[in-house]
Image (cartoon, rainbow, N blue to C red):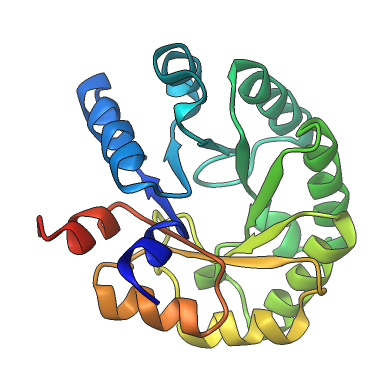
Length: 217
């Protein structure tokens, strides 16, 4: 896989709490120049990006981020606003407390509600694997599949751990045929990016891919 093929699988990401508009402009300009899959940004910047760049760029934003314990109604309304502001893709965080309580059906229902609010746009479901045991990870593969989401995503990058190859392999074995995998969190070298793609990921969430592949890091 050449550099351009890799970049087309990257969600170029800037989700730091202190990200300024200057940071976001740099992110978007790099994404356009290097043709990444999207930019992944805080919801508060979606409208300004759309107004500034129009259709030059795919905008991904996060919902229930980063802890996931917002109520379903809040996540649904947040999603509707993001879509109205111009988001093309939504990355939502599951309610990890529901998982720990064995409420797998509740998680599935919430994913389904957010997917409906997406209005046909891509939905990626962040399951935050660092907090889950194997049984819970498998259950989340089923929930994401049954709810009709487009991707299962490993991590927010704000938890106690990030993407792990073993988790990607486990997901690959248990998701449905229409579900893709996004790895994110702690992916900081070209070798890691290539390894996750080879393991079966369709997308990579990272802030470093452009720098690594353009020779600026």
